[in-house]
Image 1 (spheres, helix red, strand yellow):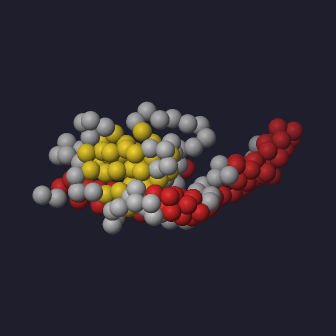
Image 2 (cartoon, rainbow, N blue to C red; image 1 turned 30 degrees about the vertical axis):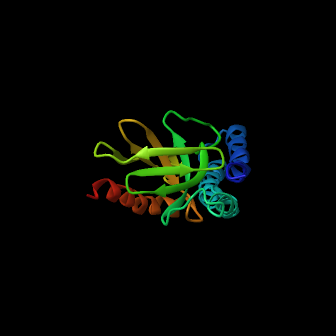
Length: 181
């Protein structure tokens, strides 16, 4: 639904706008305005609904993983995850779960996987593009160590744009773990 709602919102004014442009041969009139409105409406819908049902998903996963003792840390964050080389036309995230910050490693835990990334002096943390970046609404926090790389996008906030802003804080927390003596 996080992809379908924005797509539908974009299509409703865009398709008639393109049809009007094509039928009339006027590419700067009402058809063009409808296409622009479609783009704007689609971006707003993507920001608002891109993480559709995020809160219930987090709650269910928290009950499953934290309440059962799978995640025992004080500091963890709900994130989207992708491994190095993951690619999908339908979703930016390969999986969703909790990113646990530990002294010497990051641990991603979901219903189906557990991924550990060692935080060594050779570990690099930076922002990378993901499908949400194309619209200015998101980005990966790439944690790249010599042994393994993993990509995380916060899902702590309600909207994509708020999570993009929050990603700066989460990146700083991860970097602090690497530089800590």
